[in-house]
Image (tube, rainbow, N blue to C red):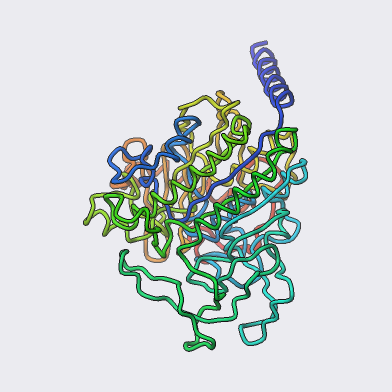
Amino acid sequence: MKFLCVAIVMLQASAAHALHVRQNPQPNVIVIYTDDQGYGDASCLNSESKFQTPSIDRLAREGMTFTDGHCSDTVCTPSRYGLLTGRYSWRTGLKRGVFGAERECLIEDGRMTLASLLRDNGYSTAMVGKWHLGMDFPGTNAKDRDWSQPVRDMPLDKGFEYFWGIPASMNYGVLAWFDGRHAAVPPTLFTRKKPNAIAISDYRIMPPYEDVAVKPNDLETAPDFVDSECLTRFTDRAIDWVRGQAEAARGGKPFFLYLPYTSPHKPVIPIDRFRGKSEAGAYGDFMLETDWHIGRLLQLLDNERIADNTLVFFSSDNGPENTFAERIKRFDHHSSGPYREGKRSIYEGGHRVPFIVRWPSRVKPGSRCNVPVCQTDLLATLAELHETELSASAGEDSTSFLPSLLGQTHQRPAVIHHAANGRFAVRDGRWKLVMQWRNKSQELYDLEADPTERSDLRKNHPDVAARLQRTITEIVRNGRSSPGVSQKNDVEWWSDLAWMKP
């Protein structure tokens, strides 16, 4: 009888939750994604920050902060794949590192993305900013380009109806302002990294450019491309597109905007009005500029009277670039906050990132969630919001956090972390097991007692380590971490799975 009562209560709660979702209009959705911003680079998460981020702080003050939020990898390409598809990128053929600008898109045709999910639910969809998931440019290299031909295998083929941006990080070339499938000014010139005197170990992509390649790895560049214009151009375009959607949004036609910025990733190039304004050098100044542009977009939502029913998700693709160590020495600014290491690392500083959701009409202002969450979870969250059941081959590593967002609670299966070098870790509750890799042994951390990961407890708790090893093995082999029918990874076994037999 007791179990029957519990089941009835659970069914009633589920029905009430579904009714709540149905009775409220679909929100506009904006995903703001910064590049190499650490957990400690938001002043709402770091009381000792050497600069303030009032726009990011506003999102936290008016929304929910997930204090244990994670990207799905510790570098650009795989994190973006996980965010957009709800699937860990290490299940694909990309096992380490990132893509260049030009190669087959990591998101295969037909795979559900945030954009295709929302497009199929009646949304207008747009992406403005940095893609970095692979594109198919006309020709095979700079010698045989025909820029009158369209770019293929790019955002417009993955659920986005509008695209304006650049193909990848600026150090990978093919740099032009792409509007849809074409660059208004084609990248017909060449350049290479140039010194950036204002930042730590940095470079610039700026004129003058050459008519012919001087070195084998010279970057294809458009005559009008300048690195310092990215944030302004992206925000201007995003604002123009959202303004064009506002009237329809007020009438019930929602929109989705994905806005992946290029900051504070190198090159660190704040515009003049922000230089010298922080206490953390050019990097801090660059974060001030980034925050200001976010504020411009938030102000537009207010002006157009659509802020109340717009869900804004804010996060970063990974932890801070390794220049964070020098910033600690020079400015006493900790980009990773209290966490260990930064970008590329398997430790918390590599993948614990700002993770904030503001939705004024539904989310309690100033609320916090301490349940571990991953950026892969956004797909299932939006699917539940729209009462869309994910197929067995969609969002394999996505768990909805909508209940927590609406003031209830949710449980998250174990989260898998993955470093740029291919090393794995598994997180379940308070425990994190870093897996053996090459000549490195397993390490076990109690993140509640030791969030800085200084005390390896594997020898003290071999039972916990064994349980977590079974957990990660099952998640790898099942092809998914969310409940459902087992799926295949794109590759059955690779050497980074050192604890598993082929």
